[in-house]
Amino acid sequence: MSTNQKGTTSRDVDIPASALMSNEKLRRIRIDELSDGYYEADLTGNLIIANRSLCNIFGCGDLGAISGDKYFRRMDENNMTRLREAFHFVVEEGEPVPAVECQIVRFGGDLRSVEFSVALLRGRNNEPIGFRGIVRDVTERWRAEALLSQRFDLLSVLQQVDVELNQTLALDSVLSVALNAALLLSSAEAGFIGLIERDYVRLARSVGAFTTQWMALDTGIIARVIHNQRGELVPDVTGDADYVPDIPTTRAEIAIPLISHGKIVGVLNLETTSSEHFTTQIFEFVQVLSARVASAIENARLYETLQVRLDELGTLYTQVSNLEALKTDMIRVAAHDLRSPLAIVGSYIELLSEDLAPQLDDAHRMYVDAIRQAVVRMTQMTTDILSLERMHEQRDTTLARVQLSSLLEHSINEHIGEIRQRRQEINLFIDPAVVYGDSTELYEAISNLIGNAIKYTPENGKIEAHLHPDGDQTMLEIVDTGFGIPADDQTQLFQPFYRVKTSETYAIDGTGLGLYLVKKIIERHGGKVHFRSEYGKGSTFGFCLPLAKAPENSEPTES
Ligand code: ADP
Image 1 (cartoon, rainbow, N blue to C red):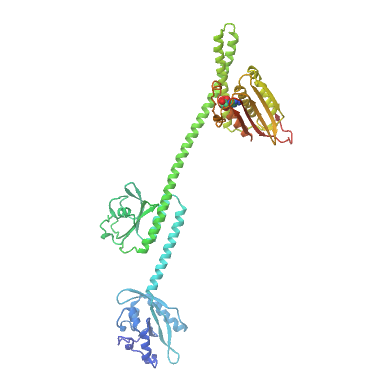
Image 2: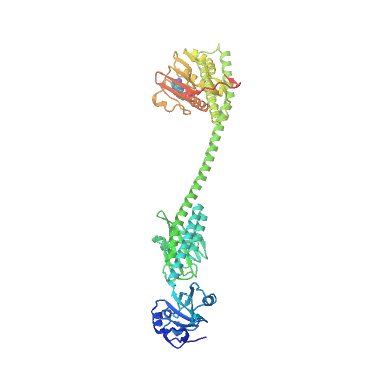
């Protein structure tokens, strides 16, 4: 091994004569002018020539400090082995190797990243006599690359967090995803996400030995950050007058307010044991993360509120439905149970009025009539209520071909006593019409219209019943010369319980359910109701229904 430690410059290093070219002086001057480091080593790897730039890279004024094998001592075992392997490879294979990247400890004590290129140095007879190469300080490039790769890593974490935050609306998951990401991004040992609740910050999620769960908003770095609405990187908490110690080993801290739509919802806090640990780059990334976390927290909270409201609405809806069902049941039971006592009262009043007829004076007869009318009225009410309930139950209608003309004639026949009693005139204009439907319901609808025409037409008035085809429909209309309906009241007809009270009609009994029932029945059959009315002149109420197609087989026809 050659030690060559005499001189302090490359020109002073002891070079074997065989390795030097004839114009050696000139060559060495040129080498010294190189901005990169240059070396020549013998076959054992010992440095025999080096220039000033190499000396600068190693941080020594004296080239003797790195000559021979001394420069190996500035590297660790691993780096030294890799460089030696490169020398070995070049000799064995006779081919160049890629530059070897090493870390060296300079004489000043700081670390440098350097690149050694290794080429074979040959003697006069082309025999290998050593190595030479350029040594380049790549510390800055390495640092830039490391920063770039760290930035890339941080960006991927942010992207991943975005995906995860978008996947959940549960506050717990949002907090846990957010805090884990912040700890990962910053390599902090401890941290928490605090949510503002009245005058305190509550530690909603934390990692680390925090002893307090509630923080007041008037002292400490957290309070300051929230108050100023600005994130802070505190490199050394021990030098911060506002710092309120919790974890005793904490040195550096990042605290960022979580602001969504201009409103502070909480704070993200990260702590580490080594001061100067958090770089400005990390701080910036955590700030970007915080903005996303804040809006995710707000979304999750809105979602929670929405869920609560929905649950409340659900409960309310169940209560209302239960009440509605109870009301319906009570009305049905009341209407149903009233029917038989009413029938009893009705039949006894008839018996009484017949049996006692000889003894009754005019006043008694008036009382009996009043009772009879009241019974009729109450019976009509129970009938309407029960029909209405039947409509609301939406039970299956019994469908068959129905002769509408027969239903109409049948209903008029049923009312003929009343018509005569009121000395009204009735005229029929009826074409045969078959529809598809439930004959009981359709009969009820027709009877309601005829009953109304009789009821709301004064004595000696005229009533007409029309039934004519109208395209693929049939149109039924009951026309009367009755009291008519004032224009203002016409918009509300067909509403349940709506009754028009004019001077002519206020004393007429009714429930206000008849027209509503007619509308329901006709619409259930795919038809439409209509009316025209002029106050003081009369009204026309009617409906259209689709005509049934000609029977293909022997379907039953009801009438
Ligand atoms: P009700 O006859 O039991 O009061 P309806 O629902 O059958 O209930 O009718 C609602 C209101 O429409 C009646 O109170 C009445 O004022 C008005 N009405 C219905 N048919 C006629 C008609 N043919 N002529 C005048 N008014 C009518």
